[in-house]
Length: 155
Image 1 (tube, rainbow, N blue to C red):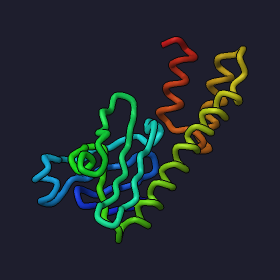
Image 2 (tube, rainbow, N blue to C red):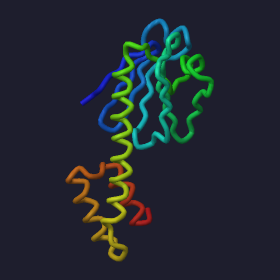
Image 3 (tube, rainbow, N blue to C red):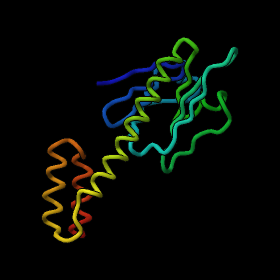
Image 4 (cartoon, one colour):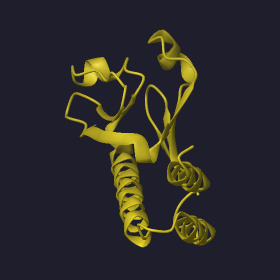
């Protein structure tokens, strides 16, 4: 399931575990924005969202560890690689996308918490077995399973 929001400087695509900022069209090129950027939803630390005003567009901006988002409002957001600017007609779509992304961020935090509670402290192999069961049920991802397994084995 992909959800899509088209902005003036690119398109926001929300996928299962990632968001993708796709830069197409003349506006993106004029602003120097090229290529696509994919960000893991669980790595997003904050979302800045500004509704369109009477004379200005709105924007959605993503921050994550190591990112350098602009802080100058709509004008700077048009040139920021972590932002998508949108018109008033797309406001409802971008609000929905923001809500979906936040739901996915919260679910990722909940899964991490469940994972920590599900693991007993004593037997490493039984912990790995339980991790495998969580992975098979789709509660954790393969990458989360592998990372925790390596941590438990001290690799």
